[in-house]
Image 1 (cartoon, one colour):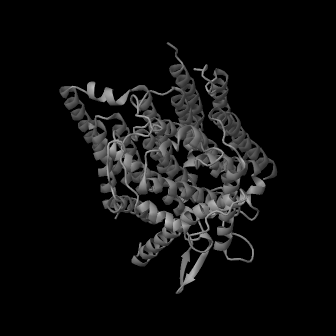
Image 2 (image 1 turned 180 degrees about the vertical axis):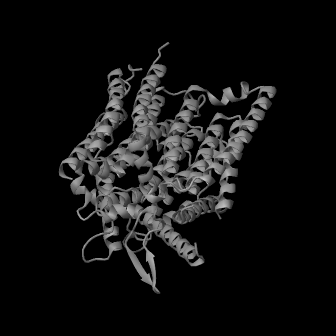
Image 3 (image 1 turned 30 degrees about the vertical axis):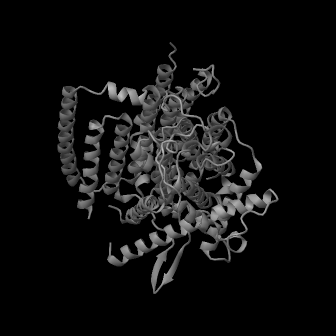
Length: 122
Length: 167
Length: 327
């Protein structure tokens, strides 16, 4: 393994340790008087109605899926950007092709109204 | 050091993969999957494939986010989990099959490792890992790279068509 | 790796972590103070000279607060999610270079915790993991406000993560590396000069990713109460709170590293320059909060996908053409 990553492990371990210790300590130190009213979910003072875990608009799901696709596109852009200086015009053309094809998809979702957040669309 | 870290992360990956299958609650399963992918990324780092590790976390973290949202949105969890868990037999069969698959993967992993031992470090000549990946991807494997864009385009269209179906 | 090297690495990690926590504490003070003065108030004034002990008093107070696990919560995830957010925010600082190096007993000590090849991607990877913390917090709390806040936050964060990722591609093209130290080394002229649009997009996305005003919809008080952390109390709430500021500091540090020349600057030592730049960015964050009202959710998503994303792509193409023409 590249030794450069060991300090990162230290950092992660430190942060984890800090969080665990702080949460446990506050649990021990803070006083606690539980009552069923206090532990109720907050709903502006009313008694909570129904199940909090309801189904949600498919909108969020679509956004997440589109995110994956374009995230993968971005992942291809990183290595490309890093060696762009040596690829020059050749690199530009291949990336314009790549992004161009994806742009067709982008225009498609735009025209389909998947990026609108009104109630009427999808 | 490398050996121990390999066993540690490999172990975490295998255990959470098994947990993912065994967990009844879909949200827990999805989370176990995240742990699997993160520990795989750590294994990539061990192998010196840093760029791949980063991509692994970024892309799969996003992908599981989708799975997770899907679970939240399309299942009404609390009731669904209790009433519609897998039957005992199916459950056992699934976990058996999963374990078998894991064993197979482990064997496959061993084979890959043996292969790797034969191959010299090919990427060591270039300044960095990302550059090495980039050089291969944008010269030698140019066509697969361009074809990927069409695959992604299909994914976009597919996502919209599937999600956009009205009742 | 020798024992000395491990010792130095560990010491650096501890020092940076403690400094980060101190900065987090005092950026809450800074925010209250600056906001106060912008609204013609005084801000914290009572605890310590000029209110300087206020963050510490707040911390102690939160420690002794009652720790509530709301009924019906998914206990494990409920406790885990603030930790995820905090760990991701704190560990990101590890790859940021604060300065060149200092000599301690003839030992060259580089002012950064880690110097890795994929530094920038490492930060993005951690921030994509921190989305989980927020979504899970929303889901596990068994509260409608929390779930809505969590979902909003996740959709917003992933949308803007995309534009953030694309906005820095221009910088990477100039620098030819993902390693933060290389990026700093390449900035004889700050990249903000070569990449003004990239910088603009990056900063806008940074606001959205930190859930800061004007993009603070996940915790929009007047519609969602405080959103995803409505059911959290005591130190678990404090972890979210600290993570927000730690995230702001990391993003400011990243902006300074990528666009503002990192620790480089004339006369003053590198670390002072770096601190100044981070401070300037933090001040800008607070200033914006004092100035702009909140976006509406549909505007926010539309803006992210229909404006920032295409503009970021266009920026990449223009940068590419420019680099081909002018070398």
